[in-house]
Image 1 (cartoon, rainbow, N blue to C red):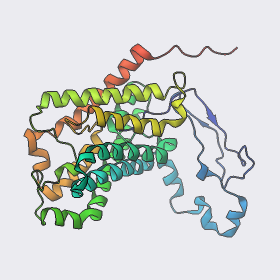
Image 2 (image 1 turned 45 degrees about the vertical axis):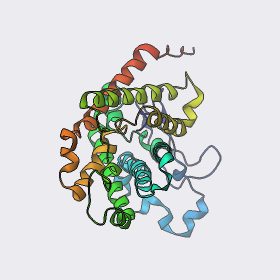
Image 3 (image 1 turned 60 degrees about the vertical axis):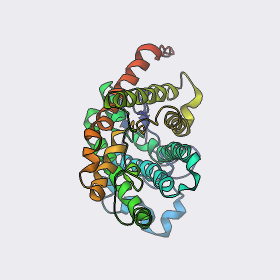
Image 4 (image 1 turned 120 degrees about the vertical axis):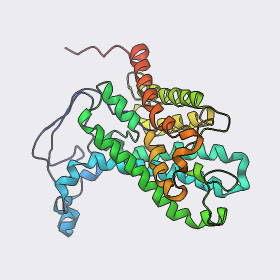
Length: 325
């Protein structure tokens, strides 16, 4: 569940001492940053501050903070970590809330799909301007495969995404620990009336075989990437400026309409990171349950993401804008 890398014309980002609105920056970058075709520099609001603030205390200047250069260099990976953390925090959090609050069972699934959608939108608002808001190894891999993202960054992005998902699951367990004990009496069960395994990762519904579960994950992820590329292209739609909300609504629609049979992982990090954490609670069951079902949500989104981009580029991609003389 994530967005594609922002793409467009090559650009230059000249570091100056003032913003267009006249506010001074708190630091200057001494050189021009040349950006590849698929990356556009988006100056962040946090890069600017009133000069009076700097006079109050040196701590207000982040260039004085320890390891500033290192953190600035790797901030896109940090953005992916925290963006994925927020996604899982809201997504798995709403599943836990619905699991432990059984009074509104009729609307529980709708609450889950809405929670995932709005959680994704909030995550994208936090990190899209820094890292592109992938939050999904399948998005990262497919963008690199089609030349829209640097292969050099792929391992770091994927590691940050998986780690962010794991950390969010651990944090949620701390929040809901007492409710787990109330619900199952301290005896952790993956499935069953007191089962809580579905809070962390996806499992196919009873009677749904691996073949059609894999097909579901491929198609849903393909639809995800196909529409993300469509709404992210300003030559097709004005949604370019509302991507977080639009993509959140897209995931809400996928979950509500076609995601029920598998839990619509459509994101290997969303499934695998919390699944690894859940082994602390249930042993090896999260990986062996359903005939080792875990490989379906771990691998099929990669296939679906590549398929979605291919279909978009082959059938929908519009003609490039004519160059101005």
